[in-house]
Image 1: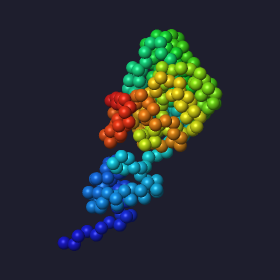
Image 2: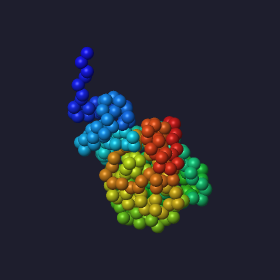
Image 3: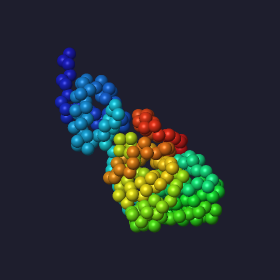
Image 4: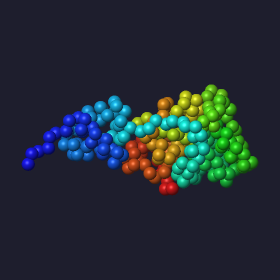
Length: 263
């Protein structure tokens, strides 16, 4: 019986992509076993695939390169229905961090908007948001003191951003800031598609005693153009329970209080 010929780099790299398509994340050790080559050879193949934009290295392994966050027309309407069960459980858990008399920042986005009904049970809350949708939802609860940050309105996300919104946010001392995102990972932290978004999120985190990231697992590994903050800057991350085990280990390794909820 003739031994199989060793694979050339193109064949190895095609096999790596096949394994990633089947498993999502594959360890270096598993790749060396499957391909019958050294870890150094595997890392060279991964480097070539990364240069081509096809994969992204993670601690001890590799994952498929993730999509870049885009903002399609009517994105807000689409996001209201996507992942709704996950958003509900995330919002409920996030609201447990709120106590009577607090001053709260509520970021723009449908996940933060889902927190609004849970705030009604608290007395003496002041809530600032840069999201007109959340602002209107908060008006249903007259016992809450509501501040809507002014600024330039993003016609796609319907969020207030830029210098004016950031200035309003910076003028308030928050007990807790709930920050949302469409893209997050250990390697790249929390991201945003526009600098106007970054400016407001950073202002809120700087003004808050504690920052909480609320983001479902489908956003993990996605990439947006601008970096907001590393995960270590958050006291708590609230997400659903669909993160891959390797991602759970990576996120927990940052020392952040990771709370995963079943939808």
